Amino acid sequence: DIVMTQSPESLAVSLGERATINCRSSQNVLYSANKKNYLAWYQWKPGQPPKLLIYWASTRESGVPDRFSGSGSGTDFTLTINTLEAEDVAVYYCQQYYSVPRTFGQGTRVEI
Amino acid sequence: QVQLVESGGGVVQPGSSLRLSCAAAGFTFSTHGMHWLRQAPGKGLEWVAGTSSDGINTVYADSVVGRFAISRDNSKNTLYLQMNSPRTEDTGIYYCARDMDTGASGWPIDYWGQGTLVTVSS
Image (cartoon, rainbow over all chains, first blue to last red; front, side, top):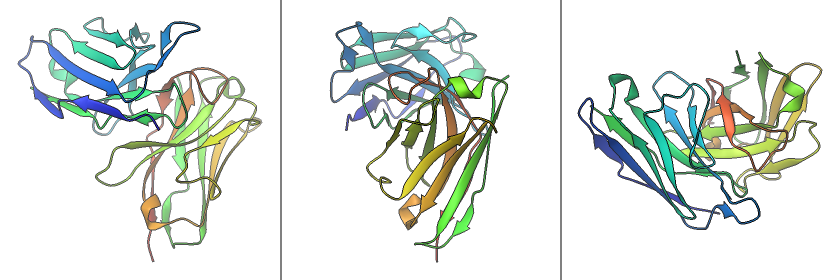
């Protein structure tokens, strides 16, 4: 199985500042045939189901604010939240869908 | 909008059986792969099983293979998870989720339900 490791476990950021979350996979999730990274980011708020933010490592899901961005390739990825807003308080997870079983990082809690 | 509503959770004894259901609405169910995921108390997210849009292709986590079965009824817009011989470690919140594409692999999950709690205990 591909092991996904996120850092940090938690992050306190001031309103308007930037939050950066890292995700590392134990194996390459870049498929050479189509040059796509099979990596997604989810936001999970209490009482709500997880919400897809980013897929293919850097493609923003429809309706997701452009302050959220994803980057990276191969085994190292980053989710950046620019100008943090109060509504961004949540736990963020990375997930690889390159191979079965799909696996998740352990989550990063973002607080104000 | 996309709605996924799980049901069927509850308390079940080890070694018995339980069937979870997921009612889908707001999209063409028969054109999307579907998945079950879970979160055990105090643990991270775990993908459990997936099925293609036509129900022909299914994939499972090693932890449930041979015990759980994912299936779907496209005429009823419903996804199922048959849980046979559950173990205490199967306790958790079970989530139904939609694949962005028709298969059970290779595309991200884009919508999740609210979950249903399964407790395996004697």
